[in-house]
Length: 188
Image (tube, rainbow, N blue to C red; front, side, top):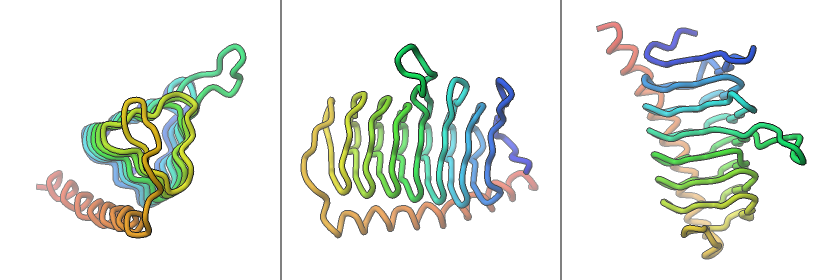
């Protein structure tokens, strides 16, 4: 599928695999062994660089404007390296740095937050805006962590979890509108 304004760069014999229904905004750069699932959205000016390992993004996940996603290669004593594995229905806020970690289904990364190698954000869990989840830290399901370094603050309420799920639905719908607007602008 043609994606005008998007830099798609194969490297080391690996090319990005992007589902036809995914929205990739102009200005994005996607490099190497990246897989993006159905209905996901990568917003304006994001960089996804899988030149030394892989990045896998599930379905209906959104990566908001200006975020940077990367991974780390295998090393002595660490034969698997640190791929970046992101589940379904994940929200990643603007200008986040997500590096070699795991974000389980319905996880949330707040604005400007950082998640480092081998960290885990559990399902329905939230890493607060500006927080830094350091290497190897594991957030449980439905937990809210904040601070630099991030620490658990509390368990999330049903209302907070429902709000995050509404955010996923909003971004999935909004991506359709942006996809149409970008296509119209290019035809105009």
